[in-house]
Image (cartoon, rainbow, N blue to C red; front, side, top):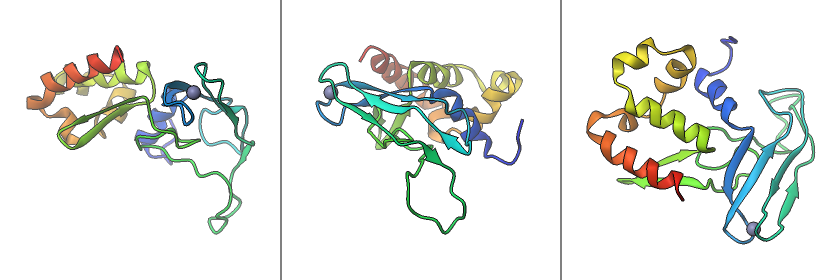
Length: 161
Ligand SMILES: [Zn+2]
């Protein structure tokens, strides 16, 4: 495992192959496909956002890695926010819990968060590297024991959205 990257972000990459978003055109469920993206490569191709409800479709030009930090133009990738990293569309799997926002890129990601919330601290420490990587970096309020039941309820509503 590469240690040069933030491990939270590395594990997030595992969930970005397909991202459920709110269609910018009709506000229904749309899909972002991240093409050949797995981690930051020199060039990312095949990025698109498509909606089967209204036919909206947008494709990103291949993204080239910046040659220098001073280079500001081009697409900015945003990981770790309640938006998709590529088009910056609002995530479909988004809910509020007391002024906080709980979000996931897709159902697999939601299930993953759900498993972490469901397991107790000890289990998390014994779980695999990925769980530790992402679990230890989830906000404290998500892991708070007194929030567990409410959060699991919210997650189950989101799953059926
Ligand atoms: Zn649409």
